[in-house]
Length: 118
Image (cartoon, helix red, strand yellow):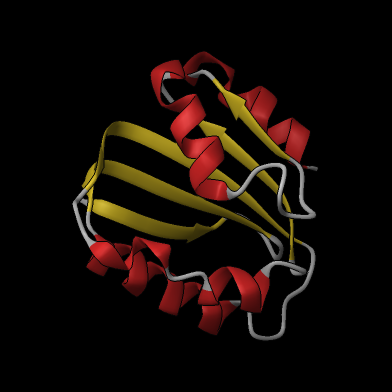
């Protein structure tokens, strides 16, 4: 599956990531998000990791264009997934370097993550 973007409501988006995440899938997901978010602000992301196996090797992962273009729009990010991915995902999301708070939740706390976002 890779990545899937779902709109939960007008400003909460769910991103599901499964298996090995390919750079091409990530780029396609970002293109869809950029189009959907063109006239939206105060975006909250719920990122759910289902059987996440890491990232494919690709030198393009350092491209920060999407982050630079949308960093002010994204106001909160919640990850839900296996705790073994917490450190990597917090680094991947730029937690601590972006204005939005980022928090990681284990799979049994999906509803808590949803509540934290609002």
